[in-house]
Length: 289
Image 1 (spheres, one colour):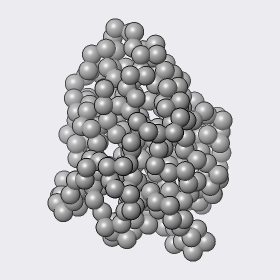
Image 2 (spheres, rainbow, N blue to C red):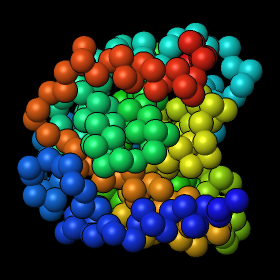
Image 3 (cartoon, rainbow, N blue to C red):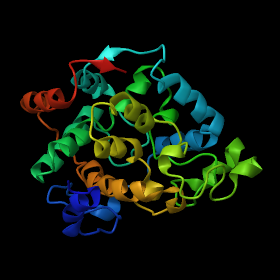
């Protein structure tokens, strides 16, 4: 059986890094790579969301939200199909994203089509399609500051590579002495699975879908918003060997998530049959959300 490293290596070998830190693909937006994720000139709502996110994403908040939304025995579960959730999110616009104002289903199809045109395995195409379905949390009444945006570890020092890192001064955890070192409450190289991340759609969706997808796909979903790590290279001291191997898949995924954002609108009716069939390959008709 080929190792995970053997599988990843050929995919990474021919990729080139662009100025924004992502990977160049044959299918991408016409925008220059360096114009993505530029927050200095982002609309006011983006900074306002991060201001609230950085002030309120504490260890206590994360533990409370994981108990409420990530446990198998949680009470507030709804039985829905994956495509059904994508359609529900057709009216959802991510307030933290400076690069697109399209509804979520359009971004999902743009990402998935980019991966499909590049000949990625079907699990990666599916991951691109569903990676933001955890934003269904907003439908359940969770405010966007605890659903969207970049994720970061809590319970340890906040990296200055995190978007709007100066706004962490308003976070009560910034005054907890045990959280101020780079390891904080964690052991060195403990593995990201043992690290509490700021709560949002990544962690929630991971727990919804992890029993149905390959390990690589579940990992991408869980950490795709962890830009301080997969793009800026921070928090390596918390990662173990498995993280370093699996994070390579996040980097492959990221080019389809970020650089496929464009103004063209996918034809949902034309694409629906293909993606419904792909979803059915991995998921039962309905799962618990």
